[in-house]
Image 1 (cartoon, rainbow, N blue to C red):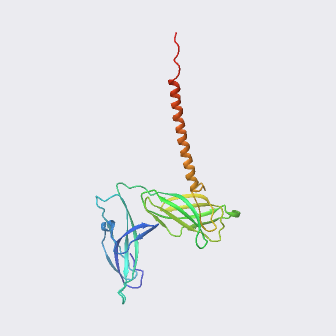
Image 2 (cartoon, rainbow, N blue to C red):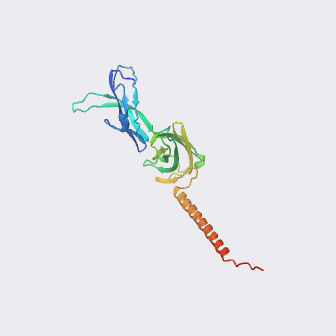
Length: 270
């Protein structure tokens, strides 16, 4: 920890609860206590640092032997508070470091995710947007960043790569949209969209054919197909019905065959 100001600072260092909601890792307001914060201790809760001075703070997390499996989240906060004003209001400035703690035997389930769909739209300002629905299929929280490129547009136009403006955090088992916004002058298309998303060393790519609407929300398509999800549902239902019909036909044929064998006339013997 380092004091980058021109004055000596008294810095309070403490742990606070956190959670993941709507694609964001949220450190909760002080005081915010959770199971993980009760397991967390700091060797120096208060630091007094001269200008440009720095110091180390050791954080220890002691997990009880009977702790339930699963991921837990917290933040280590460094906070500077000003003097109270005439109304008794105190201003505070703080910065934090996230804690992602996985509890369980072994190393737990690996991180993984799937790109479920891409949805085109235009926002209230007329900017084309692409929302990619992502599901965290692994056992670790994800901090997703990435980029989108468009190619094969009208007159052979191509665009990008356009980066995700803000990392999206997704808890295990949860789904969230990753949004990318493009320039309002972009024609509707159709376009070939190529998406790359990353969380640490984990990377996934997806491609689909999309067309932006004149306004509002456009189609939602599955990656690598360009087929609207509604059609995928219809095709799936038809496939299931065909399989059931084939199974029923097979059962009928086998029963019919047994009946014919049972009614066959006996052979005459000399």
